[in-house]
Image (cartoon, rainbow, N blue to C red):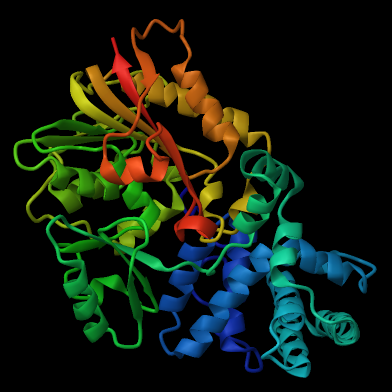
Length: 497
């Protein structure tokens, strides 16, 4: 989903409000981000990036504090509000997003940041709340947080991981336990690091060890390590703007390591015709377009013409043959929004042959038949990306799952009609919930009386990486606490006509 925020805070979206003279700069940044998340369902990572770009004078420690406060508050929001409710008879402080942000950041500092003295945490929260809401709000904040500080001092701090688990909505905890088991569900919810590292994906033939050396030399204060799952992955922390690093857009792009694995799971080979059926802005198309060389071709389809426009500009594809058949980009994923700004898909060596704007739930549009392989990275709850997008837990509801599952089945079955007889299709989601994973693949494999004339038969993966992840089977999960990636699910089918 795109960052739809046009305001979210007292500045009404007109630009960054300068901090009050007594207001901490990193807390002011974090408060504006939280206000946007709550006020207009902005994605925290994109909103934080935008605010940090408006505050270039912040030193790395202040950037780190702002980041920790944003992600920390969102991950344990329910637990913090429960603690504050012990000392506040009324909840009117929650109605102003900026006041709410400063109160919760103060509570987070008291409960979980032992490096910040209690008096400093209270003082800074009072200053921020008073700047946002006036003297009475400041006095309220002072009284409540002083009581909380005394309670923490006498009773000790609770483990952060326990607060994260407790703060997850009940429906989500239940869904994760059904999908992963109780212990694994808790490990998933509390998995770190938060925020997770940035992923880089090397083009085929690039030497990962050589690039690790080059990147470390170019950004000595950052850390670069080899990925654990994808052999083309480098994971970076503290690297800043990727566009400033050598090789960006030609030798590598920015892409989360688990997302790379989904593209490689399709097993695209030289000379094959491949369809990226839900391409977004084209990160996976970038990988696939290189995998089919020489002699192959990759076409990209998506619901949103705006995404395809960005893909064409990046990958040099021709104009879409079906412009206007999809909606505007109001529902684009947050990760794609960041990709469009930072990944810089390279033009070198490979391109996407054609692009198609198509609503798969309605029909196949102008997308031709006969593809050897089809990748369906379907719209989903995004639960697998919780450590990167903690606001998802606040924005999703249990009722979303059946609706999304129906959507996923409709998209995958319609996209399957574009594969040749015996062609392969990978269904993938950035979710780990059974309702969007095994339950959907079972529906895809079952006989369907929908008149589409295709059958989907589960089949073992034929790509080395996916075979290893699936243990020779036809499906696999990636989990942050196991693989170090975001959470994903992928399943392989052979298409019969």
